[in-house]
Image (cartoon, rainbow, N blue to C red; front, top):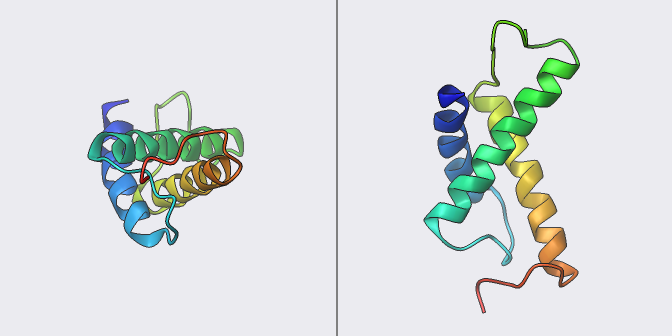
Amino acid sequence: MLHIIIVGFVAGIIARLLSPGPNNPSGFILTTLLGIAGAFLATFVGQQIGHYDASAGEGAGYITSIIGALVVLFIWNRLVARGLIPDMNK
């Protein structure tokens, strides 16, 4: 669990740098939380498809966590674009 949080922290920062667009979440804490959510998403999907052993507590690595964080950032951007989440940059 702690491994996923640490990896998610790094993945969130890297994903924010890689993600284009004006609707990036502003703030260090929000970016970190979205990265951690991406790491949990990558871990969950990886365990469901059998890539990671859930009973051994295996989590996603950096690459898949970054991909998960990019997915979460994409969803964030779509929600901001639809007006369901207020744009923090305004």
